Length: 292
Length: 197
Image (cartoon, rainbow over the protein chains, first blue to last red):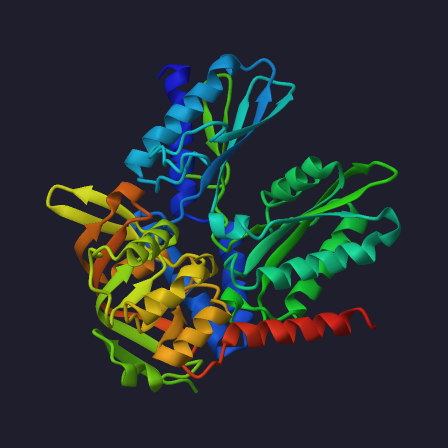
C-alpha cells in the first residue's frame, strides 16, 4: 500500500474508532461513576450511557448523533516523508469517513449558514502540528461535540487573584454550564500564556488519559482538588443532580505575562471520543487507544 | 420512588397535567424533531401565516438532529439523541401556544418563557440522556416522513414512530417545577460554602 493511501486509511479508521468506541480509561471512569452514584435519577442516566456505549460498540455505530467538528492532533518526526501531503490526505479521510461511517455533516459556513455536507470547510478539520525528532507520524483524531464546546469559557484574571480565583472560575463555569455539556464531563483547564494559548492548553488537556496522574506533583494536587470541588456542586449526570459531575479535571499551563493571568476551561462531554495511531517509517501501524 | 408511565400520542392536556418533576415516562406513537433552524423557520411561517408541513398538535417535539442514512428503501436512523434545548428558548412559546405541542424532549432544560407557556397551556419538558443516541435510535421503529431537508440532515423536521422511548425524566412540569433550576440553586449554595472554609 502506498504511504498516501495508508495515511488516509489510518485517519478513516481513527475517525471510525473514535465515533464508535470510547477509550478504555473513559469507559472505566463511567463504570466507576455508575457504581458510586447514589441518586436514583443519576444512576438511570449513567446506566443509559453504559447501555448506549455497549450497543454502539456492538453495532459499529457512532455513539452520539453529534459526531462533532473534527480536530486532528499530529506529532510528526521531521524525517517522516510526505509531510506536505498530510493535510490534504486528512481532509480526504474526513470526506470519506463522513460517507462511510457515516458522520453527521456538521460543518457550516458562518456567514452563508451553508452546510458543506462533507465535514470539510475553511480550517476544518482543524489540524494541530507538533514537529519532533524521528521518522514517525502520530495522529490523534478528536471529534468534538457542539454541546460541550458551547460551555467553554475564558477569563483574563488579575495576577494578584491567584489560585483561589482559578478554582472559583472553574466552579462558576461548571455551574453556568449545568447539564448542557452532557455531564459527567472531563474538564480541561489551561492556565497562562495568552488567551489563545490558555484555551489551546485546556483543549489539549482533554486528550490526556484519565487514569494517568500529572507528573507535576503540585499540578496533580490542584487537579485532584478541582475534581473534588466540581463534584461537590452536585450538578450530577446530565445536570439532574447527583454525585458525578466530572470524571476528571486535567490542568495544563504555560508561563504568563507579568500583567496577565488567562484561565480557560474546556468541557468534554462523557462521550470523550479520541483515537490515536502511529505510522512508522517502515509502514507499520500501531493503534494506541484502540488496539486490534 | 419515581413513577414509570407510558405516554401515547396524541397527548392530551389531562395526560401532561398528571405528570410531575421526577416522573419517568416512555413514549409510544409519533414524534417530530426540530432544532435551531427548523424552529426559526416555524416561527417565520407562523408570522407569515404559511402552512407548516406537519400537524404538531398533541405530538412530542424532540430537540434532536439525528444521524440518518439513506437506504434503497428509505431512511435508517443510526443515532438520535437530544440536543441542548436552551438554544430554542425564544421560539418555544409559539410552538406550545399555537401548535399545541404537549411534550418537549431535549436536554439541559429551558427558560422562564417556556416554563410560563407550559403552565398556561399545559405542556411538560422531559429529558432523555444526552449522547445516548444509538440507544435512542433503537426505540425508533420507523421514519414516517422528513420535511425541510434543504436545512440539512440534522436541521430537517423528521417524523418518527417510536415505541416505549425512554426513560424520559420529566424535568419541568406544568405547575412550574423545574429540576434543573433546583439543582443549580443547590450548586450555587454549595459554591458559597466552599469559599467560606
